[in-house]
Length: 281
Image (cartoon, rainbow, N blue to C red; front, side, top):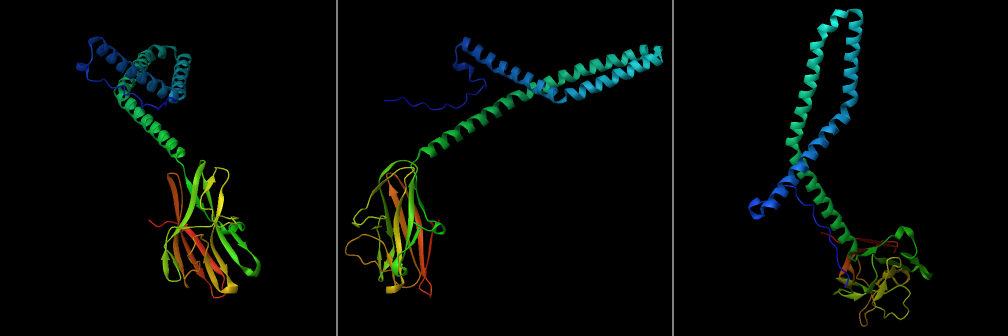
C-alpha cells in the first residue's frame, strides 16, 4: 500500500515548556529560539538600510562635500567642524543600535506572523488539493450554442437537452427528474432519456473528464399541442400539465451529484421557453 504524505504545519519557534524537557534539550530549544530572533533582527535591520542606503549615502556625501568646501575656503573652520563630524558618527551609531533594539523586540512577533501565514498557506493549499480531488458532476445547459442543447426535427418538434460532465471517471451516472406535474399528477425519480439511446432503456452511463454525455429533458411538439418530459419510465405518461411548470433534475454518480431547476413555459405562438438554473438556497 502506498504511503500517504501530508504536509505538516510549520513548527513554532517559541520556547516550549522547559520543565517538560531534559536540560540539554531545554538549552538547545532556548538557543534555537533566540538564534532565530537574532537572525530576524539582523535581516530586518539590513532590510531597512537596503531601502534607505541611497538616501543615507547621499546625505553623508553632501555633508562631506560641505566640510571639504569649507576647509578649502576657510582652513581654520575644519578644526571647528571636527566635533560636529564626531557627533554625526556617534548619532549614526546610536541610530543603528536603536534600530537593532527595535527589531530585536519586533522579531518574535514577525516570526509568529510568518509562521501563522505559512500555516494558513499550507492549510489553503491542502484544502484546495482535497477539493480538486473530489469527484464533481455538473449539469450544463447552453441553448445559445444550439445543437445538441437545442435540436429541431421535422414538423417543428424541438427537443431540449443538458450536458453532464465529470471531473473524474465515474460509472453509473444517471439523471432523474423530481416533482414533475404530468397530467395533474406529481412524479419523482423519473429516469431521463440519454441522447441517441434508441432502446429507451439506458439509465446509467460512464463518464470521463473529456467525454461528457447528453440527456433529453423536454420536447415541444406544436403539431400535437404538447410538451413532453423525456423520461423512460414505463407506464408513466409524458405530457406536462398546461401552464408554467417547474421541476427538479438531479445528476448523480458515486458520491457526487448536481441539482438544477427546470422551468418550462409555453408562449401563445406555441414556442417554448426553457430555463435551467441553479437549485434555490
